Amino acid sequence: MEIASLYSLASRILEPLFPHCLWKGGTDALTVALSFDDGPHPKYTPQLLTELERYQIPASFFWLGVCVEQAPEIARAIYQQGHWIGLHGYTHRSFPRLSAAELNQSLEKTQVAIARACQLPLSEVKQRIRDVRPPNGLFTPQILNQLRQEHYRPVMWTIAPEDWVRPGVSVVVKRVMRQVSKGSLIVLHDGVYGGEDIAEIVALLAPQLLAQGYQFVTIDDLWRQHIFN
Image (tube, rainbow, N blue to C red):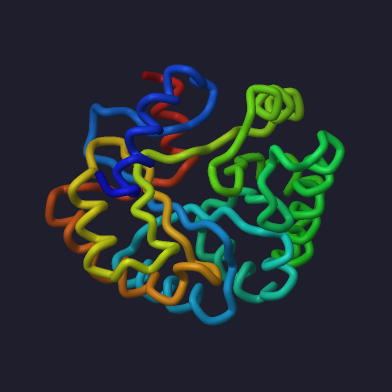
């Protein structure tokens, strides 16, 4: 079994053990969410935005604070285009390696970076941007408890096609299409690892999903499905 399939299997195993994480949406409708980690990137993310606009796809971005600081104009463009924004930490350090104070600081520094880049009041960012995807998908029950106590919403995934190792655009697309189902939450990457291929991946993937009748939704839409199912 390929590693990309193991990520999907792991999500199915872990979902009932950690029901307060978002793993997928409801299964009553043909909806799917595209999410992108590790950006924004000054070169790869604008290419991705072109494809998202071409197919009128609302996407969800989980940002690294340091990347927001390095590409504030790109971050602002994503926000202004109406995409959903989440947190991925200030740098790509696994949360289990951080103390509770360091984790809080990492998320808060990312919110500060977003507020500055998107020209928003920090109070608004702290209130609205509360979705968190742990780098590498690594967490502990203690980390989830901390996130819940601080009113963050932990977000995982249904499908992780391992695009960050660049197995080939067609390979990534085939992996997604083989695993996709109602309510799937797909994680892709627009950062240093995987970002070089991301626009081409979406350009091939989007029309195939649309042809099968899927409607693209955001992480916030999946949360609403999650609550009412």
